[in-house]
Length: 301
Image (tube, rainbow, N blue to C red):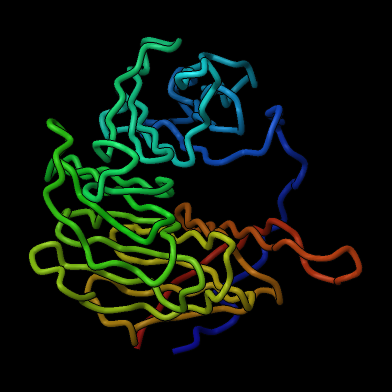
């Protein structure tokens, strides 16, 4: 059903940035420390991966660089991970790049890391090949989900890094994967795909269900998974909320907030933050902005 428009009200906020962080090259990925708490400045930090640079751990309070973690190849060049995530306990940074995983101990900056090859050799027909484009960790089940631009998802044991499950091949490269809070389901998004798929890890021969969204674009369209909702933007400027407690794709509310793609929409309490914009030619008129909305309630029929 469509919710009443007064449920979403634009919030008057100061749009000037508090701090600006400058990386030398294009940014590939970033992730917040999982125990980030604004009341504890020591926990306010995030990791960033950018082209041909070490991973940088930035302080979110004063803008200083706390630490650097360097992946170095056989030619002694920096390797920038295409995907990053902290482990749920916050002790390690997990990185994904071409045919490989690696992890750093957060308390040990520098180039001391553990490398996990996903294939035995470049000519090997076994294993998971390609650029690792998406990562998700499930502490309760001891699993790491790894997605690639080569259209595959493997699940690995967190202790041994041995593959324990492989999902059917996708039609396009993966852009995001997230475990459900109980660890029984995996939510996946991929390039040029008009749905977010849900997989029951107890029987993953085919998707359990699909949540529709307009997504025929190579741009990443992130979704957020909370204990109650799946929240996502699409290519037509619409934000959708799905009730995941009943796992029925028909139970949804949506709101059109613009005309261009919404690559990210995040809910913080009763505040929804949306990012809007896409790559375009200079003579095209498109919306590029970050907006904040207050939400009174979300009612499903």
